[in-house]
View (cartoon, rainbow, N blue to C red):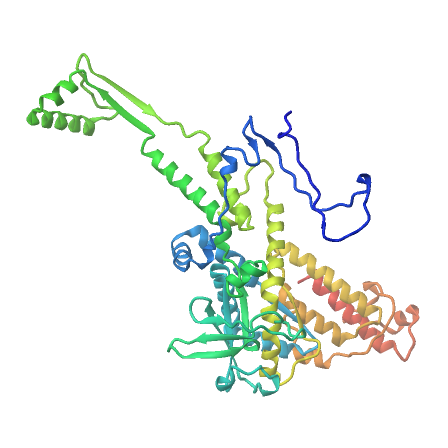
Length: 516
């Protein structure tokens, strides 16, 4: 191997700083730059070969507004890439976890529906993925003249929350260069104000506390500045893979027209064309056209002695494998399985697609925490102030499972959750009132125990009666203990009635789970 073909390495050190000389065997680790090169074989760095001609120019396709619109309106794959993940992020929505009464939680759920908050958030997520950025203006009645001021919860009047107005980065919202410098603010480092332009052309300066942001893929610092504090469009990531797939698809479609070619060889064709007799050429054309119309498996084709007829068929073997490889590249770029993006059934022996979907659900859950949670964190306190006049200290939420469970899965989930409540109740940790609240809250995701009313919860006994679970056969038809059985169970006389009620409650839970 020549000297040039050897791997080259050098250690970069700061020669300006004086210091003792270090033996070569104890040289500190530093910046290393390795490269392979074989000039004679035209391999490696700096050699004239096709691979070294590869470049990756910075295109910033996100800033091409017309291209984004054209692809979203006319390309079904792009539309699925933009819409599918936001739809799955918001499909099953959230469950509010708080000590508030169930009727108050239902009032919050009603605001989501009446003010179309869920639809507006979905719209913002879509435009954020398409254009790299979008914003939602929080509309509060009576705050029209103070949008440039920080939002003070004390000035949110009852029923004043009116929903969101969604604007994408190209049609009505522009971040300012001034950034939030308060490290206690969740928007620290983001634009402090946004210039919002309404349909009538009126421009307003809006404080960041009144804006919820929807951002595309995150970017490094300098690129984020180039995008005016927004992110990159999802299309920018898949654009090159999309071009490969589209060109392959169109080429395969063109080859279909060449799949079966019929060729007629005529010995005197050259002489006929050389003579230039237009009448003879027209007669030839009419003859060929007539024979072409009559050609079938039941027809006859007349040829001269020196003429010949042949067919040429094109084989499409291997094209589908290439086409599917480009489909896989697109699916990988947009972080979606092929079964979800293209609507195809899993291929291969024993293929179910479960592992692909599990990976996809994890991607959606990560997107919920990254892009959807900051929006909900800002909206929930405002909605509580508008509806209740205060923000509960324990207000919180969890994202509901993305996958819709089957009836069997729901039944198993209900049994496990109900048994957990029974165990806590029988251990004396919670009372009947708390148990009923837990069952009522479970009804939103399971569809069971929906008939438990607020009145039932209010009239329930909230005392706790610890003790072991008694066999169901020790309970009478009403679910209570008789005197003889209570004595045999070792219950005190003073607590006999209450313990009987407790056991009756547990019996009711058991029967509900067994016979939903």
